[in-house]
Image (cartoon, rainbow, N blue to C red; front, side, top):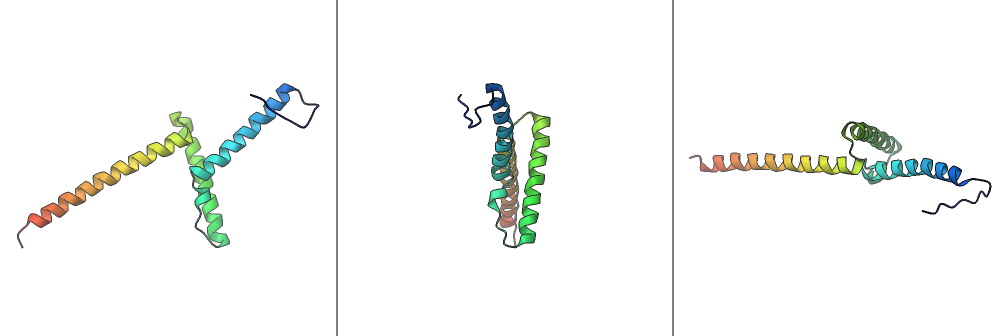
Length: 108
């Protein structure tokens, strides 16, 4: 890996340390935009935009807590949550089908 800097007085170690700090910030921005839906704000007013931004930050914090507890990254957690939500929705649809089939078989 090649790291570049326009500051010629920095050592290789100093450049690497700066890069590590920047990388954490880059990961934060990517995760809050993609996993906490910051970029998908349908809001129009300042109040709703502020609410959406704060909720996205809270979602990011919750993802961080889950990341610490589970050892999984944000993308894996989001994927796992999506799969579990889809399974729950399918189970609910199957229950509705059973109820509907039962109602259709009952005499009037």
